[in-house]
Structure formats: C-alpha cells, structure tokens
Image 1 (cartoon, rainbow, N blue to C red):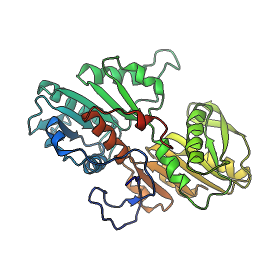
Image 2: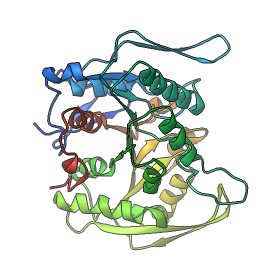
Image 3: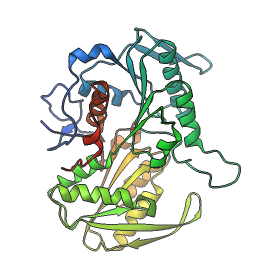
Image 4: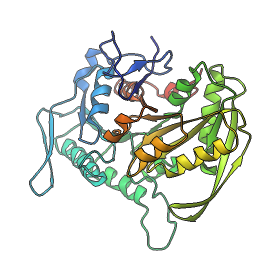
Length: 370
C-alpha cells in the first residue's frame, strides 16, 4: 500500500499497521515508501540517534523495520558531550539520525557536537561506512559571504562532518542546494525533497478553491513551481503561481512587500523551507489577505518556530500551517489548533533502505507525482 503520514497536534487516531507511529494519520497516497528492510540485510547496518530529534529517529526505525542500536548520548557535569556505543559496529554501515537543531535545553551546537562525536566514534570502532542522516542542516543559512570578515558556516560544518569520517550525507531540503558542493566528491549528498510530500497533502484536500502556490521571495520560485507541478499532476489543474517581493531595511526588518500575481478569491499556499520566528510568514499571509485571497495556508519544511513564533501564528490570518517533523515542534504549539505536522519518516526510511540494499534513489528524486 502506498501512503504518507501526517500528525495533527492534540489529536489521537486509531491505527492498525504496526509500523505507524502514534498520533499520526494515513493519507491516501505516498509515492516512495515500499516497505521495511528485509531481515537478511539487518546484519549489514546499524541505526543510531542523538538527542536532537529522538521521536523522528524512532519513527524512521519503525518504518525501516530495524531497531535503533544501543547507544548512550549524554553529558558530563560541565556540559561536555559523553557518548558510549554498547554494541559492535565493526564492518557495518552505520546510519546516524541527527538534525542539527535546538531541542529543549539542547542548543544547535550541542546537536552538532553530538553528531560529530557519533561519527568519530563509529570511525574509531571500525565501521564499514558512516552515513550522517541530517534532516535539518543547521548553519545552512550562512552559505556565502554577505559582508567582510564573516564565515561561510555552511561550508565549515560540511568540512567538520567530512573530517571526522562521514562517508555519505542524507539531508532534507537544504536551504541552498549548492551546499552539496561544500562536501568533497568522496562524500556524496542526497538532498531529499519534502515539497512533494507537502504537495500531495494539499492535493488531497477536496475543498480547495482556485488554489495558488505562493513563493515568499524570489529565491523560492523554483520550489513553488515544483510544488504546483506535483499538485497539477495529482489532478489539481489550474493551480496558479504567485510571488512576494520583499524589500528589507535591515537583515531582520522588512520595509515593504509587493505581490506578483493574482490571488483574488483564491486559496493560497505559501511554500518555503524554513520558518524561524514566523514574522515574514505572517506578514506574507496578511499581504495575501489584503489582496483578496479566500484562505491562507502554508507548507514549511523546517518548523524551527523560535521566540515569538507561537503568538504570531496564533494571532495571524493563517488558516493552516503545515510543517514537517525534521525538527521537534515546541511545546507552545500544542495549544494551537491550526498547525499540522507532516511526517517524513517514510521518506527517510525508504532512502536508508535503498542505500543499504544498493538500490537506485532515482524514484525518490525523480517524478514523485507520477
């Protein structure tokens, strides 16, 4: 059966399939996931996770049909990361699921250090291959020099991951696709596209009226066009495309927004890769409402949702905000009814399964709407 999953906050749903994580619902179609890993391949690989998103790691484990390996990731009294792997990894392919993100009192830097030391541990323990599964690649927004005397942090993180011994990296919706080039040819990068999963979710809605996919900036037009293509391939013909042009007074201050395209009477879907404090997202939604749209929805891959994001979303005109589970959703959002979490665990599990069995990833990247 083909399916994808989404979970709605503060909702419980019945399940019959044992692979389905709790509090998630089955949608009608999923174009990639084909099932669990055959048991005769289990001895070849091991699955590990740090502390940045253990829920996602457990969900991936369920869809892969392979348990998480025994590993303790803690800290000493002074805050230094302490790691102990309690089973052999010699000659195995080790998959480490660790988004570089904040989680509770764990900072982005804690997550990065856990990832680096986990990779180093596997390398020193004679693992055959080490694959870093990084659903959210932290520091990705610092991908070029915008001023003098500043780092290119995305490249520096890639250098660190490479130098401690990673053989391959699996990411989801890198902020800039060229980040793949920060890794050497000896460390291939699989950059998975979460937008197709979001497009399938919205394509299954039966109440869409004149849908228009909206890019919140010029740099996201290609992402929005791909989102629209998948929706149209799933039968939502006539889906429109619009773009918002932002003029900034400073790095975090937007002076003006201009809309390119028509949204009058339409259901708008804002598509972006990251929502941090949700200021830009809420302003974009207000701008669409100002131009006469019927409803405002949004699909954002990485819902960081820091600082005032919860209050802004609650007070905004957004009817539904859909985010993936690449990073943990803050507890403050449990009280917000219009936030939906779309699980990428089947997509990540299928990618890992195909890596283990040496199958092509073409159908993961290619026409997912076919």
